[in-house]
Every structure is written in C-alpha cells, then in structure tokens.
Length: 84
Image (tube, rainbow, N blue to C red; front, side, top):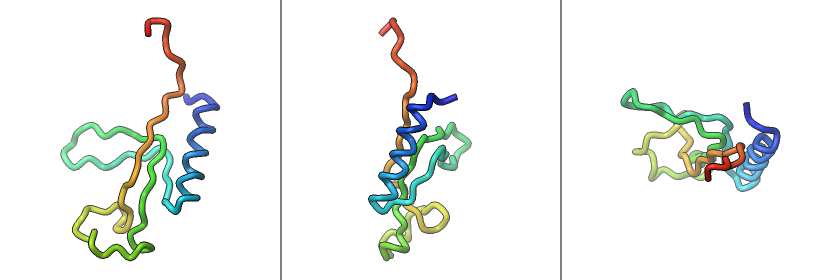
C-alpha cells in the first residue's frame, strides 16, 4: 500500500499534467505486445493528438486511437534502508 505522501505526489503530478494540457492517468500499464512484463506506472501523461490535430502521427500505435504517451512516472514512497 502506498504511503499518503506518495499518493499526494501522485495527485499533484496528475493535476500538473492536466494543467499542462495532458490527459493524465494513474496506475497505468501499457499493453505488452509480446507477452512480456509490463510495469504499472504511477502516473502517465498522454498527448491527445486529435485536439492537437497531429495527422502526421497516425502511423504510430496510439492508445485508444488518439493518445500518444509523453511521460511516465514511477514514484518511490519508501525510505532508503540503512544498507544504502
């Protein structure tokens, strides 16, 4: 279970992404094409290519037909151990 401070940072990243014009998702996993491990990211920012009218990216594999991943964030909520 994530610490409250980690959840707060996650919410702040979501809001920041939205303020910057991105579609923000929490706890997102990209679908694996080859049955390989696909990590779950705490926050992912996506560009909506329909809003931006970016017809030049139509050849790319878009998420839900219109989202292009821009940034993915993995937050570490635990403190470092005494072994570090």
